[in-house]
Length: 107
Image 1 (tube, rainbow, N blue to C red):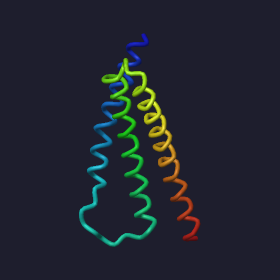
Image 2: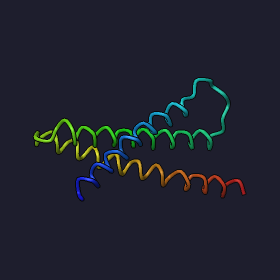
Image 3: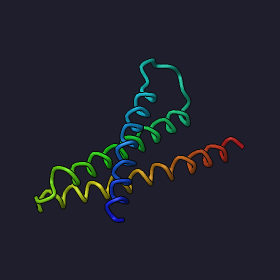
Image 4: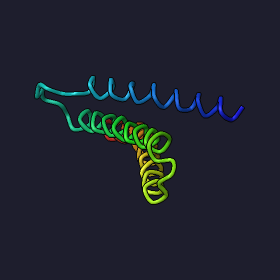
């Protein structure tokens, strides 16, 4: 049963890495249009959350496929995985807090 759960988690991480790449491509801003500071901050937070999650997906993939027996590098990849996971969480948490703060200033 554990191997099924692990395979399912690996599949979800693989799909979410593709979704992150698509999300970053959609947020790519080629034309320089005028934006207010709040909208620009929202876009930056979204890009950061996609980028950090992509780092998590890549580090998770490296940990599971390439480095199962290399102890010294495995610890660095695990630390990278944990840090990118927490940075993603903080960006996702900051987005509604930022919207709430901007809404409070407007009133």
